[in-house]
Amino acid sequence: MTRPAPSADLRPIDRLLAIMARLRDPDGGCPWDLEQTFATVAPYTVEEAYEVADAIERNDLSDLKEELGDLLLQVVFHARMAEEQGAFGFEDVAQAINDKMVRRHPHVFAHETYASLDHQKAGWEALKAAEREGKGRTESLLDDVPVGLPALTRAVKLSRRAAGVGFVWPTVQDVVKKLHEEVGELEVEIAAGDLEKARQEMGDVLFVVANLARTLEVDPEDSLRYTNAKFVRRFQYIEAKLRERGKTPDQSDLPEMDALWDEAKTVEKAAE
Image 1 (cartoon, rainbow, N blue to C red):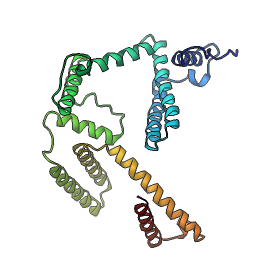
Image 2: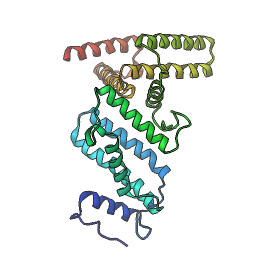
Image 3: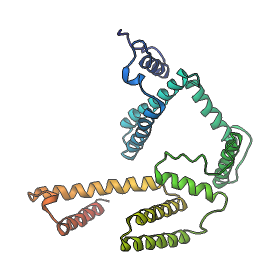
Image 4: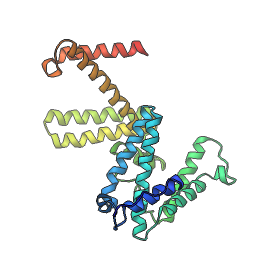
């Protein structure tokens, strides 16, 4: 049975909640939406978060508005499924984050003062640690660092958590020295032809890179996104120049493409 969409006169968030309730209604709802679970929706939630980041990277505020809406839909979707199970609803989600933000900003909403931004960060971590303890998560400092995070991001969070209790290389130079050491171990396994050990050593290299990023206060995912975009620009320059020559990349060779790569770098620098 076809029914009209929830009234546009509702507040936008109330209308969105009503739309999701209708989609999940066993009586006339959407078959696809009805068969979803937390687990099946989770990949879409992660994907939408990345699309938000992409819109920000492109400084496309119109697209950002749309992508934030898509991400909000994911929150509403999960909250609706939880409400159907009698666990919690959207209002509970909003209340929980309201309480958390007030609790974690005592310098704004209470009478706490911090001498510096570093002290504020330390206070934030202390509050998070107290929250973990209150939830009974005291077995390990690392227990609640989500496994589902991108590996580089999780590596940064793991190392930051350990650094908070002093398990950290003292200087940037020490981290760089460790990076060279790990690269050397990777080269040994590559030379030996042991691809399984090389895979493990590659992980060690990337973990130290994540530590270096944390030490430099650089987001490795952001850095890699920047380099990915740069690679795409320069490779597309190669493709365009080859087309002018009546060729495709598979009809070229490395020396020709490498020369065009250097040309693309020169063009970019001249435009800066």
